[in-house]
Image (cartoon, rainbow, N blue to C red):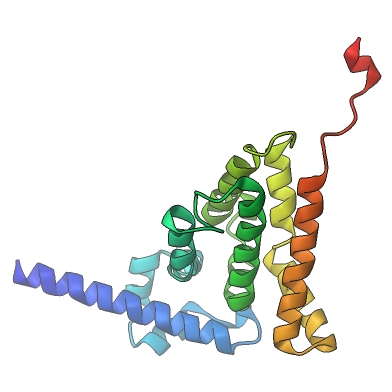
Length: 210
């Protein structure tokens, strides 16, 4: 039993070391593709075998790191107060959720980009995307008169794709100081979400009334 507990503690310690090392590497490297599993293992002081046993592959490591960074946001959404928490009116909660996604990706630009660019399958099938989409769709369905909540959720999330966020962040930074660029992007997204939520259902085809 003591050996098993010691082994579990070692695994937890190694996992924390790997996530911290990967986090630091992604923050420093210009391109996400520059970070390899060998780099992470060396920085964490563990063998590559340990890394692959714990996370499976590079995509698994990216997902684990992403989820660890996203955990505080997830807690705020599940049990927190307004504007992210479940007690928030839907018309206020939708823009708050999109703002949280944007801010998270701005704070974790290279990590988000690496995860969304990973070639392990469609980004729309990724667990983190399906979770965001499901949440947004459920909140959108609570807004009277708003149709096609599933498509609307996809369209709103498209405005926070990591590659677009990266492009806009660079573009905005050329014209403004960093904190002003961030606020400009948040305002642009808020205005876009407001316009989407303000739009009513499409006009009905007269043929449908017959």
